[in-house]
Length: 201
Image (tube, rainbow, N blue to C red; front, top):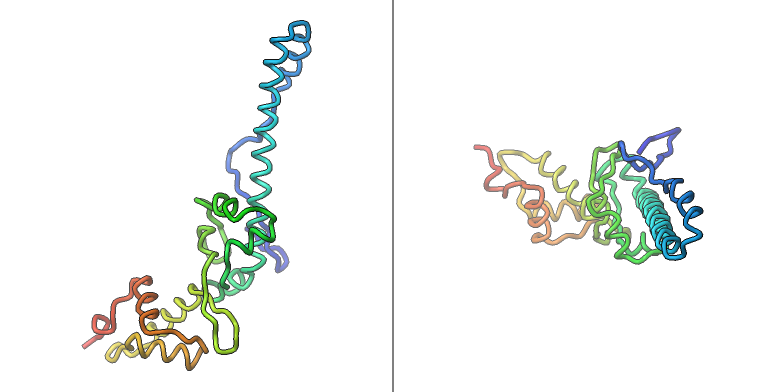
């Protein structure tokens, strides 16, 4: 992904993989085999199979490119500001926009990574659930985790915050109503120990 004049360009990295092409030799062989119907039909089947395979690879590449564009159109804030700005996103939204089945989106992004201005992330990273804030907006789970991490990073080490206190701060300062058990879940996902273990004596 490249940033050009404030816009982001999606480019699929192919590495050293060469373009597929159907050898021109088979066309010559088809011409030569016109006098032998069985040989001609055999070569014709192989020729059509090769063309189908080449076109299928190209369709797959174009579909992945469309999916990536749709993802980052919605995650522009992430590209500009980082993980704390990631938005909730469901695969069905992308499937509907691209015009494919949700299973196609799932298969297309499996094992694929995006090299973004914010680092390298698996494409699955950008599909996250969310929580409705007090003003009716959706806040993504990833963004909430970033807020939890930020709050803990700024706490008094001698008097670390409990998960319940973190939840109250998220509600008061960020308008994110979140249960204590959810804070605990996010904190554990971030590999941050409990307040009793974070305390510095």
